[in-house]
Length: 245
Image (tube, rainbow, N blue to C red; front, top):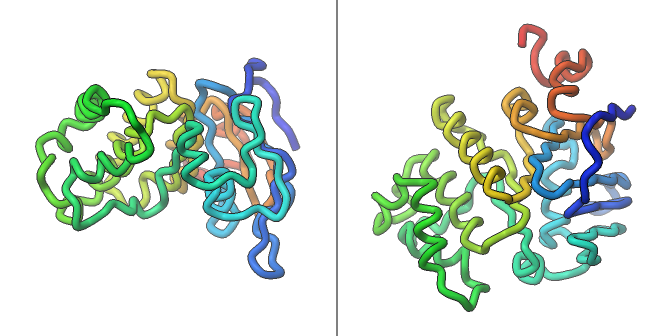
């Protein structure tokens, strides 16, 4: 089922017929996604639907059995993760994955490891987004709170100067106030011209910020539309939002 309604825009990323198997099990079953440049696109669905696998395939971390992944008009499927980062796509993984024994500043420098230019202005930029990281610049990342570690994971990804930032469950395990902060940051990043591809268990928050959204169930896309359309959709409300919302 398709729900149409967004304005036609140029796609910065197109995934066609993505198939990913683990052993004999197909985790992703031939899905296609279009990510318009400058938008926030969210992928919602239950645990095990294949959402994280989809992002890892785009990032080159998981090898697809079949796929055409076109970024900015060029085929990138089969490229290594570092080639994909240098092309302008970066992933903020689920669980944050900061380097616990390195300082905040060292973590941020790791995000820029492929760059040959000066990172000074980008450090200033991420510190303006996340003032708490500036305050904790010399603190070990492992001693930060969960919310601060998530901010560091996003800031580290931004240090590669991406055109698309993919986020896997950025609000997982965080207090409601911190979740609001994270979503405010997602909107700010997007307003500054970075395309966002978001996986999020908090479907209500994700659909409220998304320009475009997909529902994924057992490895297939079952619904797509604008964030507002999916928020209003009765089957989405029942399955992912709770009837009271």
